[in-house]
Length: 313
Image (cartoon, rainbow, N blue to C red; front, side):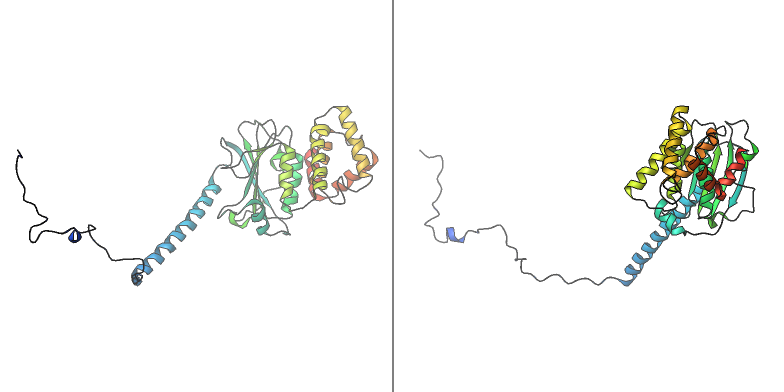
């Protein structure tokens, strides 16, 4: 017996038919072929505001670069710098290389003077760096400075004035390159160019290579290898080696100078500078062979070398 009865609908008048039932929940118009919506006109005042914002951001960037440059100018070149005696001089001569070349070699730094800072021990002064400083003064307008670190008790007067007598200083921005020498108790010369991001370059030979590269000389692979070889030989054998090694180097130099006026080819290179200074510091000038003696006189005829000889007296 059924629980309850339902009247049949399929045969009743006005009953819903299957074809009358909806086949979807709701309908939307097709958008695939619809015309693109019309572009709204940009408000001229909004455009002006955007342009002004871009101009302000550009000026802020320029100001930031200038402030970064100024901060580098007043920042102490050495982390533990303690000055007890300061002598500043500047030297310059006719420029044969423009500032754009320095920007190309060292990178452009907005608002800041490119400053090379070298720490050296006065007990063993790096003569080659002093020669290179004089040569750089012939190519660029150099702001030179000599400082004495507190780790050094005394420095000879000649080394305090190794860049010459103090002269009237010009505004810092008128110079192309800064060259700061700090007499400090260090085992070997150290150099920094970018004091914030650069690890120090150590060793007189390596610093000499860097400084000589500022002249923009280009050499092929063979010549560059020979120059590097002579620089290493001068530092590690002629300057720091035994008497037997020094004798072998002098014989090799004599053979090379019998073929060309300079150690590598017909022009002065950093190899000549470092080797000449090494001979001066080791006292091997009197025992040098004939070709080496002639080459040494050629070096001494150049003003940068002759100025260094005064420091040795």
